[in-house]
Amino acid sequence: MISAKKTTSDATTLSPDPAAPATRWYAASVFPGKEDVAERHLRIQGFQPFVPRCEKTVRHARRLETRAAAYFPGYMFIALDVGLQRWRSINGTFGVRSLVMQGDRPLPVPSGLVERLIALTGRHGLLDFSGGLAAGASVRILSGPFAEMIGRLDRLDPAGRARVLVAIMNGEVPVDLDARDLVAIA
Image (cartoon, rainbow, N blue to C red; front, top):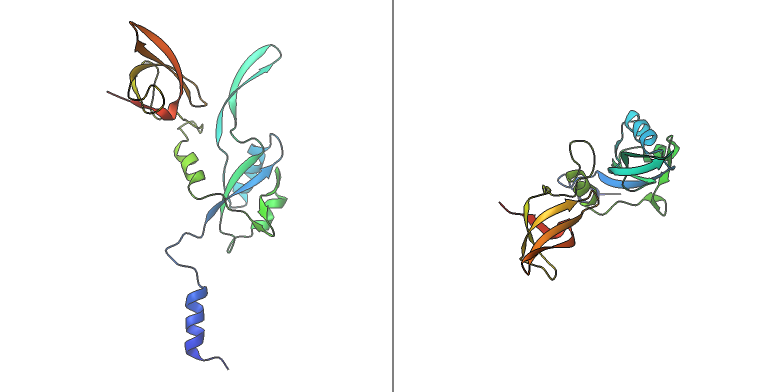
C-alpha cells in the first residue's frame, strides 16, 4: 500500500520544473535542396522550424545569380517539446529525412546556438555577421598582431571576413581579418 506522503514526494521529484523551458531546438536532416518544402510542411503541422540562410552566388548558363541558400545545406532546426508533441511525425514530413537521433530519442542542439543564429538573422531572413559594420567605417581591431590599432573598413563579405586598411609606415596596408575581431568606433 502506498501512503499519501510517498505519492506526494514522488510527484514533486518527477514533475519538471515549471520555470525551466521544456521546448528545445533539435536538428533534422532534409533532402538536398528541400529546406523550403520541409519548412512549409512542418509549419502546416504546427511545428516551429528555422532554416538559417545566407546569400550564395550560383553560376548557371554563363550567368551569375545571387540567391538565398541554406547556411547548413541538408539540415534545419525544429523547436519542440518531446514530452508533449508528436515528434515522430517529423520523420514522415515531405522533405525531411529524419531527426538527428541519439538512440531512440532526438538529440537536442546545444543551448543558445539556434538562439544566436536567430539573433544574427537580418530583416531579409539572411544571416548577417557584420555586427553593424559598414564599408568606410572606422574600426578598432580587437585581437591578433594588429590589436588595438585603428583602421578603415574596406570590404566585408557575408561569410564574416573583412579587409581593413591600417595606417602603417606612411600608407594604408590592407589586412584581412575575421569580422568578429572588429568593433566600429564613432
